[in-house]
Length: 177
Image (cartoon, rainbow, N blue to C red; front, side, top):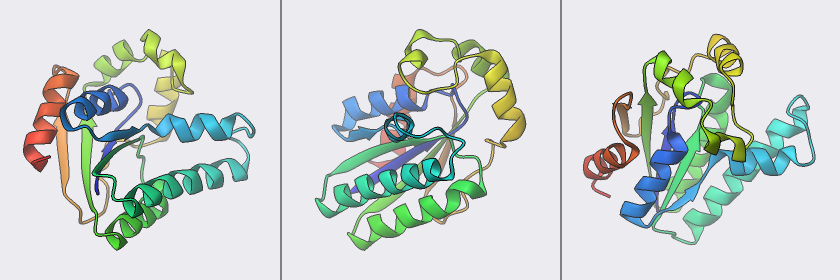
């Protein structure tokens, strides 16, 4: 299995790019908010169990996909450093255990562009950052400009002025998917 992990700040276009990449590759999309929304239906994010269950849910889905040798999965993540490192490390280990490969894609954009995108109608469908004030708070609290600290390939793309289709084509070409 090939696991493509697309990460970056809220409103960067992770899910939109993932859907376009799925069209080009027939890979499955495991959108970050599927896990968040499932757990949030029972627990609030201020509870310690919330993040534990989210991590376990993500790990189990990706591990089972690797075991079943699903050709490709695209996972999206709002990576912001150390808090997510243990989960990502476990995901990488599980995928490699089943002879899979992990590829990272870091999306970046101008802050002004993020503030334009944050209020789009599609963001209301999931438990996403939806307001400029919420985005401002998250960007102040989390450094989402960091690259992941793993040895796996990591492609950084500034998608400020690029369409999701263009970005997905760049990813497909770069990683020969």
